[in-house]
Image: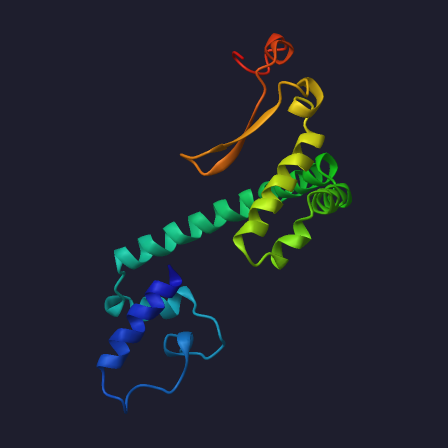
Length: 179
């Protein structure tokens, strides 16, 4: 509120002639004894010229209230953030996750993807990728489908290879709806 009063007083002083005004900053215009503090008596001298702008005062009070709430909530937020980061490091440790990513990259040969230039090599890569993926899946055709039932066909509609297994054993395990 003192800042609003000082601003209003400065605006009034600026309206007076420049020769009357002193060269000073901030509160020096109201500080007649030049001690660096504006006393209530010094304010009362210029009280008839002081104007309070309610919208500026309301804006400042609202801002300060928001800042106080922020300062109150900041330690709790930082505590929660620290606990969250610690939980992530415990539940999904970075070294183990990186080791898994490296293993999957070498298993599927993902470093060879950048070397593919023609479309036939892409289909070869996808075929290899599917074969390697079937090695990792527990419900794969490789483990549960008998070789005599296993079929790999080309789907002309989607232009992709499709694997199927019309095996009674594969259906009995409920890995597919019907043979």
